[in-house]
Length: 382
Image (tube, rainbow, N blue to C red; front, top):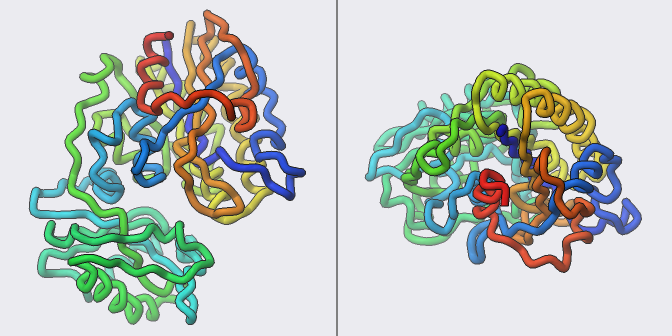
């Protein structure tokens, strides 16, 4: 038996006026997904436990079968793991976004104009040279997403994710460590001014100490791999011993090579892996941008360039099961995440399910299952 987990990040949404009151999942042309839903089980999953932040860190941890209420310590330490950083007990990691604030203090762009990773690395190196030291260090990641490592005493702060502030006044850190954090954020402006970029400063958030998580193989008895261009998801792979695949053409934007990610998954399964997770960020990026057309297009790319030939390839490998769901909702009109339950789909190639439609309205009245329970159901086939 082979297993595939498909994560179209943030694809769940709410009715959109520009789509005639339909959600993107209802409006998009998704024939393969519709056929899979017709032979599988469609339901609702609470991937974000009550009271926890509705982020990809929490949602993807749940999808991998780990209860975030037990294992989650923060977003940044997961991303730090993807960069090869091993935090000591006296260190805390912060996510360090390059952002664009307007002259009036409005969060114009939480992604700082999406700089290339190469250019962003120059910025982070400059920040390290000028502001690093005394237990503080800057580490380059991907595009606008980077990591700050600081003394553990700095963990005591309340920070707002920048994507929650799109087109809104900036809400700066509060709490015991806020003066240190605000000092770095303010000082970063003079460094950013030396670069020809839309980004105006850094934004610190998502802090935490390094989590201790059992390996996926020990937990589930299977060899697993994942492909994703997002450090957050890759970091979960590092922390759980899941093989992290590098795929040429894979990006965290609209231009990712969907077909390459599909073929990587199939090749990895053919080479002996039991399970592969495919994660694509594009639907979430579109949600944050409020770009209706881009979100619909990203869903249709999933259907056309991943699911159609994925099913054919899986059939050649023998019996298989598939789980598909987003890690959270990213409604276009809000431009940020919500903790609302999301639709899930379970398909068994041998044993048909009751069938249904994979849309938000179709499962609106269904009781939501805990998101971390679905991995067990996928692997057991119940």
